Length: 235
Length: 253
Figure 1 (spheres, rainbow over the protein chains, first blue to last red):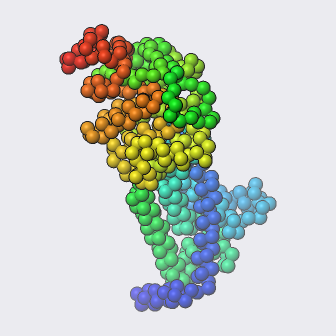
Figure 2 (figure 1 turned 180 degrees about the horizontal axis):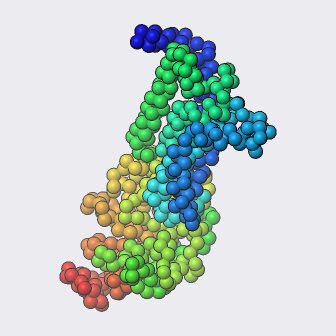
Figure 3 (figure 1 turned 90 degrees about the vertical axis):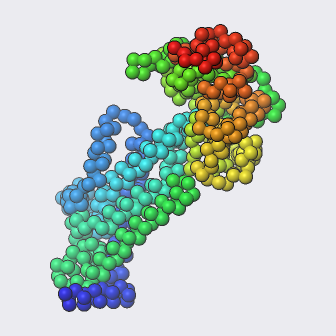
């Protein structure tokens, strides 16, 4: 228990003194996860909008598949990305394995289904409300999608934040494709796993506190966004 | 085609007339029942036509078919003698029973409709402001549309539908959820639009409202037009048994 208390003290010292190792790890985490979420948004939002608006045979199957993909186990995604990027794999020549780019790809794959599924639901609900009104105004299909995306922007932003939450907290995929290499691919979650197994609780705890703080910040941001949007009656 | 001089110019990017709006032999079946049963009706330029009938008669469905929101199982709808097309939709204003407010300010709701109708950017601000002023909503121009009261929302919905200068305005029981004062405001707004040259089709089951507004009454019963009579004759001497019973307040078979 004394160890524990000492570890906490040391963790706070690392935080307050902005320990360079700690800052480097946090910065890489943010860079990888933000990049992954932006890429996932570029892919997931159009998929969600298309599924919300289009009617085609097999749409039901696609929705079930999409919702199931939200629960993809990170280690499985890590394994598949590893196989694709490893030297013998189809994308091996790119030489991306054990780089931050590989970690971004893995997290992006984890986040795309979340963004696509949540935005599909959001946009479809709004389409239910808007569709006939937009049709009598003479708005065509592409104009309708643009209007729905714009008017649902606050809800869609919360989908992105949810995706970020999943990406930043995930360890299984990044440890496989990144390799947890010091100063190269070490992020908060992989560092916590490593330091804990080594018994260096101070750094692990410090990083853990930052992760917790991020989770609280993201959720507070979601709530604040909902509330301001609600007050302005834009949600 | 009677056009009054103060009517807004037709927006660019929309081709041709939508009047007369005509349904020929329109039938809609749901679950083995004919909700509309071979309806023929034509909306000619000019009068304020009230479509009346008891609940479930098919009045609202008929209006939605005329606006091509619902595709008939049999029969055809024509606008200005040809098949309807999206480019002419802004010529046909439509107001729903429950107004649909876009998540933006009141004036941006009107600007949106003007943009959809192909009105050039430079004209939108002026015409949106004029439309709000005509509806007595200029004070609320910057308010989010979704915090307006029910009556204000419906007035805004009508102002939005009128902003593009449509030939005809279709209204589906626009005052069904409103109190008497708000109802009066809507009726005044619709009558002003009619005086300014817009042909109007107004669906209601409220006899008093029909008396106040109608030039011409189409009585719908069991998915058919039971009669189409000028208002001055309809309320004193309707020709169909169903309309007679409805006006006398009897239950109709």
